[in-house]
Amino acid sequence: MKILVIDDEKAVRGLFSEGLGRAGHEVDTAADGAEGLARCRAAGYDVVFLNIVLRGEVSGFEVFDELMGLSTGCRIVVMTGRAMDERLVSYARRAHRVLKKPFAGLHEVLSALED
View 1 (cartoon, rainbow, N blue to C red):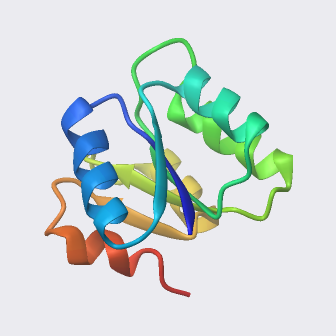
View 2: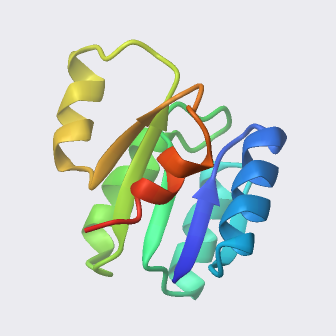
């Protein structure tokens, strides 16, 4: 499976790259929304793990909206450490899955690839 991880935390990107790579997946990462969108436009992904609250010029919400508009068929897994306010709930309803930070472990991340 081809996976993109968009997160502004280097440790999270490393965890996903290592863990998902060991599980046999091809993993790319992006440190911000602009880089993530550029990668999505250039290559097709089966799954995008997206930190919905990104620092930088392009927010995770903007990335999500654009990915939904690209009609690539990729599944979007929203990641957040914030409490689920009304805005997050509305995005979570459209996402394939939601992962709450901190993660329980790699098994939780791998389970988000199911379905």
